[in-house]
Image 1: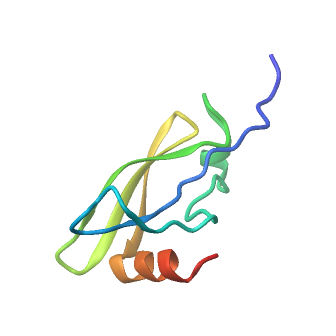
Image 2: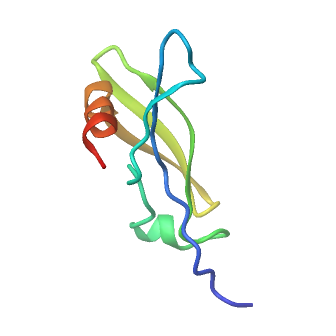
Length: 90
C-alpha cells in the first residue's frame, strides 16, 4: 500500500440569487485544507469535504465537514467572511 499524495480542499463560490446557475465569483484559492493531524491521517488522508452548513442565531455560520474519511468536524465563520473571501480572493 502506498501513501496518497492527493489532497482535497474545500472551496466556495457565489451564485446569482435570481439565476443560481450563474457564477458571480469563484476564487481559485480554497477556504479549508487538511492541516490538522485528524484531517491528514485516516481512511482517506489529506481530505476535507463539506457535509453542509447553516447560519446560527448569533450570526455565525457553522460548516460541518468530514476529515480524512474518519471524523466529522466543525468550522465556524460568518456569512460576511465567506462573502469577503469570495469577492476579494484571486
